[in-house]
Image 1: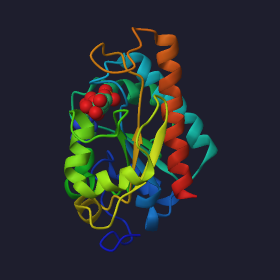
Image 2: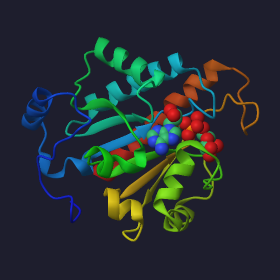
Image 3: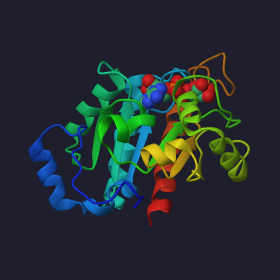
Image 4: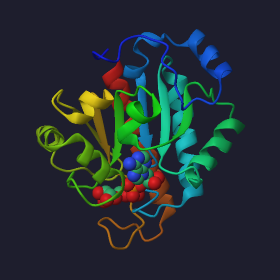
Length: 231
Ligand code: AR6
């Protein structure tokens, strides 16, 4: 538990109502819930132009299986807008599968400001990266590198210099990083998803048989990476 992120019972604005919070409190030990929470963006569905309906199937299926394997962890899918279609698709499909909404929920906000703006404690966040693991570009990659400062680049270089689609790499975030200090983020997991944008590398030309398989591998790799940090 980080200094300033001590126990417990923070009010989590991301959760819908008080009842949910109370039920949740019974199940999960609040003292280090932040360190067992992964916040992640929807991989490949903006700049990489992956179909949202297919992506939502993959997210719900892989999350469901992962949550069955490991208890005592939380997954939070984050997107910027109230109107996010991927969030509403995932919400609907997760409810159909009766996934425990305390262990898997969606959250509207900036993934780099979960604690300060939303009161959410998430020590581990995922990034929808590019294959070179470079800062910039746009979307969530630019947001995370900007918020984390230069130390994320250095830390990333120590771990890997490239990613294949469908894989991920865990980067411990130095305690000097503003994202660590302000938001309590201890690890960034870079994930490279499948690309359906003709202007980007490894373009899959609308091949959704391969695309869905790679997206599935990407989430499995992300969740396993997260589990390796928590265990
Ligand atoms: N907080 C939360 N979610 C966000 C944020 C944010 N600050 N910014 C964007 N999203 P994208 P991709 C959501 O395009 O499709 C990059 O340039 C966004 O609404 O970031 O995997 C990389 O360098 C969407 O739901 O990632 C790669 O080259 C999700 O994050 C390429 O884009 C992912 O959108 C990767 O493309």
